[in-house]
Length: 282
Image (tube, rainbow, N blue to C red):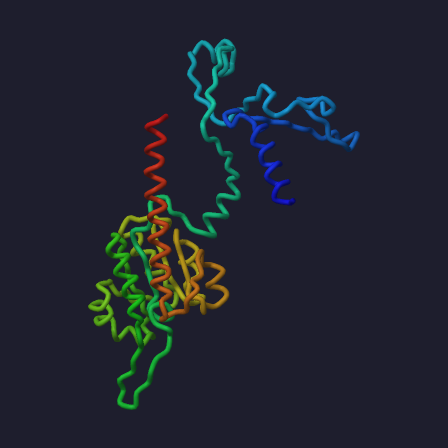
């Protein structure tokens, strides 16, 4: 019975649907003195069907083509010979919402070309295995090194970051051979060193990805167009990052973020392709 009722409602809705090429606006305004709302363009007692309304136009974007005399004589841009074009697609953007989305999920206008990755806590799990013979060791997951190679194959340069107190710093040469990445030593505030690299390569931060694992990475995580932390990162780093991995450091988190970066790059390429198509059609 319920399925039949839903099917009947959908059939009626389809048969009485509005013309999708026409904008239907039913504005109401608030009368403060009467504390009620009133319709501006219809009589609620004789409300027409949507498809019977002639439709209305509102400004969404304009081209102004006029002569100097029009401005001088009429002091306006409209001459009484206005025309209109009804777009196939029209979207109003709330810029405050758009800004929050970019800050939370990242910018992918062109796709990143440079990624910084902290070794300790991201490429490794942060643990150091102490040996009585003085050969301390750390472990690196092959899944993560594969993720780095995936980025490099897609023309994303990866720079690994190690601190002077990080045991992995002594393994810089081995890390470079293993991953093919530049290994950069940074201090307590990574931004001081990373900023210089970004400027040297003449990049904007929106074209940079950053993966960190601690509170000292917060500044870089905030600035980067795409940024991430492993699942076991501290709260301050998680808040600053635009993406939080499901996996922990040293167990595939770098690979997970690499795949996220590549998806964003593919989205950017698709959007740029669609923009070119739209401009050709226009």
